[in-house]
Image (tube, one colour):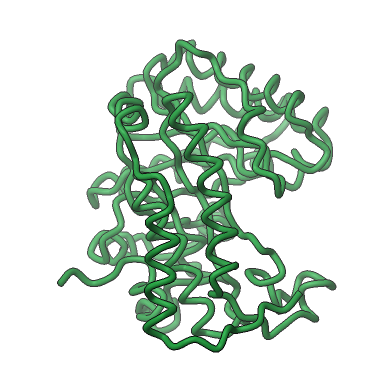
Length: 340
């Protein structure tokens, strides 16, 4: 349903937004205590998911010197979206040449003073068929964990992007814990990111983690409501026909605040740090509404003490114009307001 703008003034709307943000629970001692065992990732951005670098391309379109612009803009980490399954040969062995390219990216990220996250991003396979996904995901983490054991202590592993689709919480918990066990054989203290099942309800209460592993970060993604954030997206027959839709009413903000409160309450109870690994709005959305949404989500995560990563640097949802080699200034300001 189209969000209808309430006829209030900008000043009243800012007061209402401040009230909703204030209603979110601040990061208290329990979550802060949990975070002491893992790095504070801070503000980040997703990179390299659909880039030709993995096939040996250069500046296609991401350029490794773009990492300097990311650091200068105020980001502290990058989430490297890596589709490992397509670079697996017989018996699910990863291509050594591609792994060397991954080494080079990690080293360049570290050289720029950023924290790298390696995110296994083969969502389409894992959501479609758990039985096809499971052996590949276990093989991926066995090889990655062995390769980086004792190397790059700042490197963070993320087991799987957006588990969901045909997966249930039960099947995901089983596969997640199998992969964690594989990683811990060679990387007992490596920070590892574990995802909540990626469905609308954010079923974080159903996530099962090893209680004695305190080097874990829990992640979820936020694109609610999808009709707004994906309006005009040409790859979807449904969303391509939707829009223009607005966002930013008191009800809109209250709905987002309620979703975040659910996650925050769980984090306080379980003493686990939270990472908002993706959020964004497709560029066909009205510009002002897009900026309101991005600012509200980023500031809410900041207030809660969560790390976050915007989706994404280039391609679609982009914060950076690769052709001009420049940030989209309004998007960047919404994500990281200038310091006064």
